[in-house]
Amino acid sequence: AVGQSGVSVVSLPGDIASEPAPDKAAETALVTSRPSVRPGDAEIEKLVEMIDAAGKVTLFCGSGTAGAHAEVMEFAGKIKSPIGHALRGKEWIQYDNPYDVGMSGLLGYGAAYEATHECDLLILIGTDFPYNAFLPDDVKIAQIDVRPEHLGRRSKLDLAVWGDAKETLRCLIPRVKPKGDRKFLDRMLKKHADALEGVVKAYTRKVDKQVPIHPEYVASVLDELADEDAVFTVDTGMCNVWAARYITPNGRRRVIGSFSHGSMANALPMAIGAQFTDTERQVISMSGDGGFSMLMGDFLTLVQYDLPVKVVLFNNSSLGMVELEMLVAGLPSYGTTNKNPDFAAVARACGAYGVRVEKPKDLEGALKAALKHKGPALVDVVTDPNALSIPPKISAEMVTGFALSASKIVLDGGVGRMLQMARSNIRNVPRP
Image (cartoon, rainbow, N blue to C red):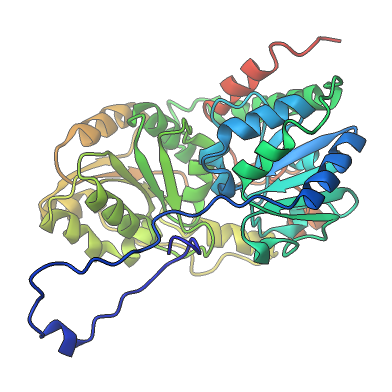
């Protein structure tokens, strides 16, 4: 589990379970941490040559940059590189990042797509980003990864570098020549801020009066109220979108979801595991009504063990992401609507705290009360099922193939506090 960053299963046969227990635990040496892996000098020198020769370099980071935030920032600052990220890399790389240009992929925003396509050299760091349609095929690409099976799996590489992000960057930083020209970086930062400014307008229109409630508004308020070290678990589907755009990383928060496999109904069971690990830490399950309904019996586990998980239920009475996928494929939506009960009443019947919210003015108070409650709680928020609209400027070809960043396929909403960060990042950009 540690070495391969995957799931391990321990199977205990019944006949073993019936044997007498030993007097003391077995003392067995186990792997508890992964080693640092440094690339060979030849690969380092080749990458240095590519970086020095490139006028415009973009970094695209994934979860493999965990623990390497300082090195990524120092490296980007030296070579004047914008930094984009995948969804799994967001919590590790977006915070305290003056070079941030957003996220690429189906849930993307900002200028990450443009930064990865308009550079001379794209460096993929610790990412197994699966959506190769969003990666360029006409720029040079180098990839750094500690898992060699990931190298070149998603795109054609000009250089594969086998090593972990932290050690590789430590080798690169003193060897690459500093770049003095930051025109490309500044242009991408401005594009990023402008892109966020545009989508924020949709989010800010009459949001406090919108009924059903904008799901973006729910996620934004939740982000403001949650603890600085909260653990968010996120259901597959539209909750991924709201978490990607509104939950603000800070180096202490965690955002956990089924980001590799896209399994439905994952948020609540993940929250149970996270809360058992630390019963004092705030754990929030961002659940969709479809996912919650699939494993609603797990809510009884919270009550049974008095786990103080807070379930924030985005209840739009539909399988929103499935409906969007059908629309993109040119199919009429079918079988995507849900006939839901009053989930708050169900929570109360189970013996937990439950409250239903149908008006924006009641949202903040309900979330505050639920987060303050000592035991398990559920906030059933009735949200707008139409928060899926695609702007008319997108061509049929773009929509059908998801050929461009979802920064151009904007789900009707904003991007929370990320606009503030983008604005702060361009304060020192020279004005024309």
